Length: 172
Image 1 (cartoon, rainbow, N blue to C red):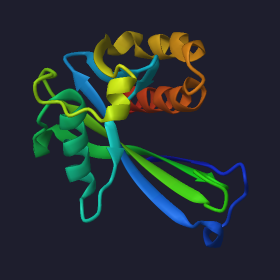
Image 2: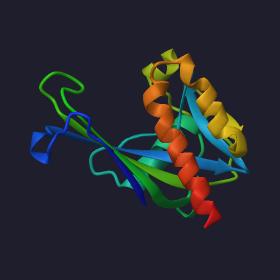
Image 3: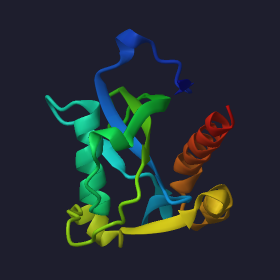
Image 4: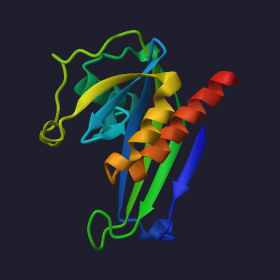
């Protein structure tokens, strides 16, 4: 599994006051990739791990909430990438957060079902929508979208790295 750590504040383990774990799904659907788009920010479906929830349970819950797709266990492949952020004074002064994001591959032929989604108020306000993009064009689409929202400067590089890693592993 490819691992990347961002630690621009040079934090040590003892400096961390909070740990957040998230799962993200690289959903491959008939040579397309399914992405969320909120306020011109592309993102993989996924979210925060809840208390007493396994990584796979989190992944299945988040994919259902954001895409309406009910994922079966055999559609979830191993995590193929982990990105860790160590941030000083985030999300507020005095808190130092470690965020671990696990990227899983999901291969499914199921289509998004908007009757089953459960968007948060934040997602509704951000006009969250699901898009299906040809996998072969996905990196270019994400790169060409970076200038449309400041958040893309943080999110897009990891998404591009995840897609490139997936494509690289397909070649092996």
